[in-house]
Amino acid sequence: MLDALLANNREWALKKTQVDPEFFKRLVRQQTPEYFWIGCADSRVPANEIVNLDPGEMFVHRNVANLAPQQDANYLSTLQYAVHVLKVKHVLVVGHYGCGGVRTAVESQDHGLIDHWLAPIREVAHEHREELEACPSETVKLDRLCELNVIAQVRNVATNPITVAAWRSGQDLTIHGWVYSIADGLVTDQGVSVSGLPDRMRIFGI
Image 1: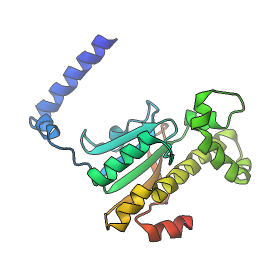
Image 2: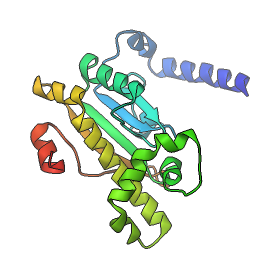
Image 3: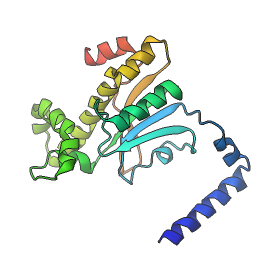
């Protein structure tokens, strides 16, 4: 299995240089991506491939259920590096329909440590319980919760002191909320793009 992966790597590198002999020479230089992707760790959701970008064009952070928790040092360090060092122009919070993390968050059984990580999704579900209970099926309910979770994480990024400091310094930075469909490969914009404090007030009232 691992030998096959190594062979795949060599084939991939050869194809890249055949198409573009300077490809890896450019990658050696300092990365200058304009995009920062906060996505789910699901293996079916490859960030660069979904939007057809090469390595070096997108800075990526992934975790279970694409969360942006204010207390997670891993996420915060990556956000700070993306915003203050790389000076990305777009933060993309990307969930996906059929997310196992979202489903697990609202299941009744105990899953151990992951239940603590997924607690913010349960809070979102509780906040929107009337809307979710009105959904015609469990699939529709979970799909809507995936969307609501993305919107909540956009709110988290938009209220983070790292983001606020960038906006106050005049940095060009917009946060977007997307949901990806594994079924057809398409992304849906959730209409909550935030480009500064006035946008945040208009969309989230804070």
